[in-house]
Length: 86
Image (cartoon, rainbow, N blue to C red; front, side, top):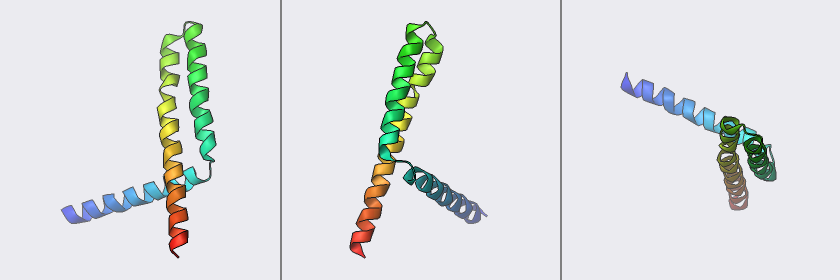
């Protein structure tokens, strides 16, 4: 029972990772950087007009965008490396 549950969770994790990789590869890496800079700018604007909680919420998006951009670059590098080996 435990092995079956573990295996199904592992397969689900692999399919989820593949789904994220496929979606992330369709978006240019520069878009993630622009998203991060945009969220920082919007956060600053919200802070200046006194909407502190909203500014903090939007400001927390920047690291997520940057990590997704890094993931996209790593997957691109991995695909290129695989092609060179073939």
